[in-house]
Length: 240
Image (cartoon, rainbow, N blue to C red; front, side, top):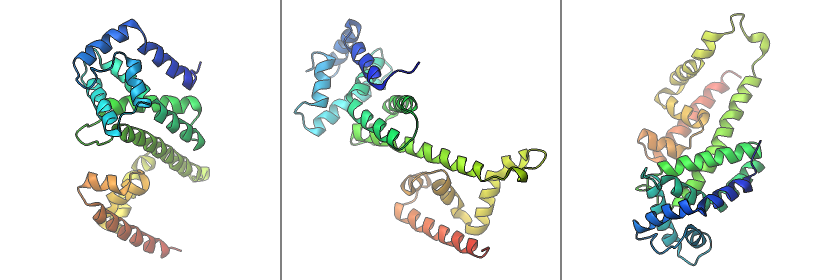
């Protein structure tokens, strides 16, 4: 039986109002100067959602919560609940856009968002992130879109296969070797930039992400990608 999106929020809100949660929150705020001014979880959430605090002040509060969520202590689950509630307006916007993009059913999208949000909160590198909420929400939405794009590409490849072309033995060896064959073909055509093209055009990573992964500047990555795809296009034209 599926649980409606608003019911998930109601459940989180109820959890944050229990005596046990309040006791955990009291211990948390006594150990954090930033959180010490909030008498209860509701006061903190009101400040994050509506209060007149400046964006950088709210960001510091979120950073304190993320740090506590990553501590692995007794308050970790409590803080994760607070973070999900703090991000809820943004998560809801991501959910609505994802459903509009037909990334999945309402239940599928909700499940993916909550799982990715929880993982993002627990793994966020506070030393490399400037704006907590914006980074988490952007990464969740980007990953949802990227996952759907990969699935669509895989489905497109499967649908392009003619059943009559499948060998009697099922083509197990050929299917298993196809990624390696593709890489080998690209290396012969465009040389060492084959990995770059595969990461961007097939795996769905942005040029900026691949640049960071390969230790290149974005400008150099963009130039090499353009040069490689131009060479690949020229070679393919010869077969027409």
